[in-house]
Image (cartoon, rainbow, N blue to C red; front, top):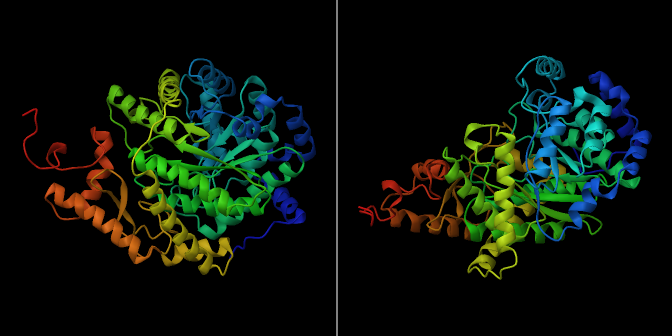
Length: 486
């Protein structure tokens, strides 16, 4: 059972030595020489200072292709044509599963063929020097984005290669991403990642860490997402991380999303140590997109409008080709420009939305209840507590593939489109909050003239991809009657 304690220098070095033999590029990692490389980078390539000093939400897409020169060209295009403020390097699926031999085969096939045989950049296979070539070639800071339960070797190679931001965490890259990794083991793996980031930070090279806020990306109740961010933030802070970007995935109701982002920032500053700089990132809609690009642009625009009101430090953008899978560089850049247009038009307006503070209080009460249950389960130790809480179902995530989560929690939208909890399972929320959610879902059921049932959950999962927010029956008419168009 892991505990929330700082790895010693000897433990860090021993694990690093063991990892070097997992793939040949690991042997080229030299911490002292890597610190020198980071110190040679100009300020505009240093992730934490750029993010933390921004006076407006910075935009960052997702993007990764197998070959180095193609990745450089892609990121240059997104910066120059899309206006990206921060750049990503999205890692391929084989690397996420630590299958470096398969990644090597895919990289070789991509180099020798006309098509990309990997869905991202295999940074471990490229090694330290190729990562540095990428960092040198671009004008903006670059983050590693991946989805790897065991990201230890990936962190060693990419941090030595000059990347200064690393996404993910032991819960957010376990529960939504994998079935076969137990939570206690992923916590131990990520304690190494965070301690490595802390070691760089202690040498004056601040490494930004970004837990993955959207989780399963499908109607995740804000209190669950925020509690995971706070736990991963605390685990990282124990290991010496001092720049944390807490994430949240859009659910689509403007008031609830703004309230959640404000709660995320406030609770992050409250629960994390004073020496940690807390920033926030807003992920545009992570669920199903409409197949029609014009409608997809509408979904993206709602994300931009939300960001303009909530003012997170960073926005992860989407493209109008999300329905098709990996977008073209042109579509990816278009998603950036659409978001920027909405933010730039709205951010100077004084927009006052009713209900934000009431919704924020509800989210914060629920989040505190979950955090209390985690602390109680671990006798004050957050690492032990989160494992035990998931084991008991007092912490849970909807639609999770991982065996570490019960997956008993089911969400549905209320009559205003806010995400509520339909089935609680054993989630550690008090009766008062359960009754509030049930009453709000009951109002929707009465509006639609149907019983509360799993059908509401299923309808809501598909709603945005079908052109609506709420999965109402009868073609979206809440009364069940004829619409004006009829």
